Every structure is written in C-alpha cells, then in structure tokens.
Picture (cartoon, rainbow, N blue to C red):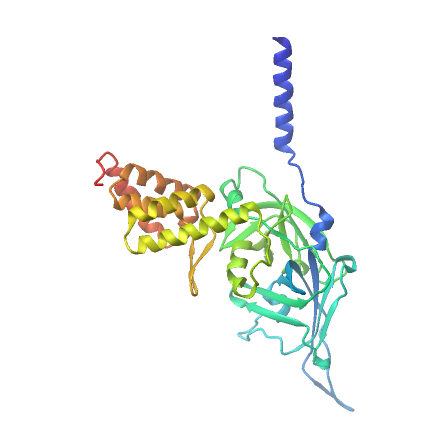
Length: 371
C-alpha cells in the first residue's frame, strides 16, 4: 500500500513538473536560418549646390522576413509590405519608385546575399503586394537549398485558452539600425485584436515582417505592428497570410504535415457543405459537416469558395443551422453553443443569426423532430 502511494505521488509530481515546464522542441538556430534580413536604401529628392544637382540617399531601413518554401530554383519569402514599399504618409501611397537598392541577407551566409540595384537595371526580386494586409511575397532565384518554415495551426487552440494557460512564442528579427540581426525574443500569445494575434515578445522596429514561431517551431504569422503603449507585438496570422498569397505559390511548394492535410480535407468538405446549404439541402450538408468536424473541430481559418470569395470555417454553426432547419432543435442548440463557446463566429456577420436561432432552438428543444 505504501509502495503504491509513493509511486502515485512520484507520478503526480512528474506530471506537475511537465505541466509547468513545457518541453521546447524548436531549435533556435533553425528558426534563425529560416529568417532573412532585408535592407532598403531610398533616394532623397535632389538638392541644388554650386556644382549642380546632388542626389542623396536616405539612411538604410531594416526589416525581416521568413523563407516560406522553395521550388524549381525559386525561393518564396514573406515580409511586411511596409518593409519593402515604405509606409504611406500624409495620404501618399507607398511605392518602390524611390528605392535605390534592396538587399536580402541569409543567416550565417547560408546563401549569397541578393542585392538589387536600380541603377544597374537589375530585376532580381519579384514582389507581390497585399497592401491591405501589410503583406508582401518576394520571389527570388535560389539554387541553394534553404530551410523553409513549417506552418503551424496552433493559434486556433491557443486563443481558446488565452488568459488561462501560457502559450510560448518566439519572434526572430533585428534592430532598426541593422546592428543586431537574427535576434531571438520570447513571450506568450495573449489573444486576438483587430484580426491580429497579440503577443508579449519584446520586439522592435527591425522585427517588422519577421516570423513568429510557436514552441515547436511552427510558423504562426508575421510581425507587422508594435504597440508603443504596451510594447506588445501584433502578428498577421498565418492562415490570413496563406489565403492572401495562395494564387502566387506553386502547387506542392509548401509541404503539408498530417495536421495540414487534415485541415485541407476539412476545408474541402466544408466548401461542399456550404454549397448544399445555399441550396437548402440540409440532409446532404449534415454528413459533410460532421466529417469536417472530425478532421478539424476548432472553428476559424479562411476557406476559399470560388473566384475571389472566401469564408470563415464555421462547421458547428452551419451544422446547427442544418439541424435547426430540419426541426432537430436539441442537437441544433448544442452545435450553436459549441460555435459560440469557440468564439470565432462572434467576429462574423452570422453571429446575429446564431443568437436568434440558438434562442429559438432552446425554446423548442423538447419538440419532436419534423423529419
């Protein structure tokens, strides 16, 4: 009996230690090898002197980026739009017309730096801009094999436990003077604000466009803002990043883990279910939604429907809707409740309908199904 109690105490002690000291699976050097430094030099307006017009350059501007993937001799890098194009000020739209040189450097010279000089009429960097998201995708020729960042979907779970359990994150970047680059800053994910993830890693201006990783080394998103009041970082979630650039990324460029594949399958099932719901085919939608939930239970993430149409992944809400329309009010109420607890639907225009349907389903939950 004493032996059993001692064993139980030892096991509980081990479990407690593991719960308060999470194992760090990510290699800090690997995170740095996946990160790049970006240096941009812009030209000032011409000034007149006794000898004629003089063209001056502005001080260099520094930012960061991350290696997303490589395929067919090309590397696809992510950074913040303002790092490459500059910030829009006084109503003037940001552009690259005044850029003199753009330089991309790799950690510990993993690959030769890329230096694009406008005076030499060089075209070494192909940028794709998503200014509304402060996001830019850079495509460069890269024969050397570089470590690409793996995609993480952990923020979806972290948001559910924000404020209750620590969710460690690591930001990699440099200072605005370019003196200390590939610096590692750690903190915790705190939640979501204005469609951006908020974290406590103490970053600064040179981290703009750089990656935020979870504790396993998965890419959560790009750091694009810093709160001057609270010193908190603001990160564009990776699901928003991928939804914005997917038309420019070749098929098979981003390697998918088992979790990625599961999510992809869930999104495909959800897309089919939404189509059935748009035609009021509730019976056909239900098994599709149930299978999608088995593959990805947590709501959230951008789902491509067709063309330029996207929607938020809300399978519990739509399953509740289909059950409600069939008069299965008890089950509908349960699904509406799950969706509301997970919270993503609260940021969606469909939340008002959920509140209405949930209230009605609760009132009618003891009625017999009409089907």
